[in-house]
Image 1 (spheres, rainbow, N blue to C red):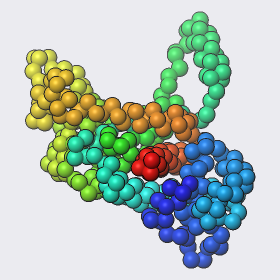
Image 2 (image 1 turned 90 degrees about the horizontal axis):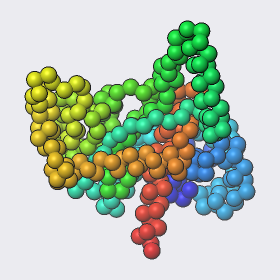
Image 3 (image 1 turned 180 degrees about the horizontal axis):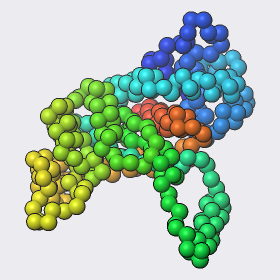
Image 4 (image 1 turned 45 degrees about the vertical axis):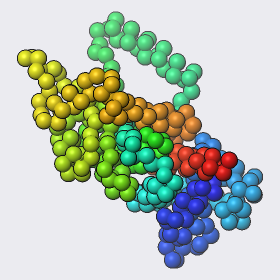
Length: 320
């Protein structure tokens, strides 16, 4: 909570409006939200925990715990794009001052993942799978068409991250709904990290989901970055020639062997998959929000909580 409070104190104002009641400051409420996410509690559960932890409240200057409605309204305000970007700016600045970005030697890694739209138990998943199998067998007997997953996939919450492979810090993010292609969120994720870090000459590593000649031109010509994306998307050419485009052909030659992938730094791309696994294991893979906006808000809070945990561990390591 102390790390989250210090982070928000340097990036957010004390109050959202001069006419508010001024019972709690925005940094204090953000620290409570990070605690809620870290302990995997609901708003009511976080309120109960804070009421029993007076020493935690004193650490951030609180005399009483905020109620669950206050925390819910604070999340609606604090997890908007403008506030999240301010918090990520301070995180990148702290990482640069602490020399843990490492973008001069290791690339920025990109990848996306989907979260569960609601928490379910393993028993419930097994029973649902058995029910689907029975329904498929019944439909096959009656000659009906198979049910598709299109509606479910269309509602899946999706999170894309740009992370520092040296420290596992998330420097930029994109939240959306639907399991589509990765090319549309390449620009917001890379541009967010590019504007945020002081060293703007680094490599960007992504999987084949980002493969596109336009993406290479955006990264290399417009931003001066070194893009590392294998040209494996689409069908191979019938004549057996290499992929079309100047930069896709360059990627074919650059990433042809294991040694060349190591020298270019592309083998560090899997670190972003490690970050996604860390977030799902430590903070949960299911979202409590019922609407698309609330689920985007939950994914933003998970990302910020992950960064706070990384920074706290870094501070404790330096103290030792």
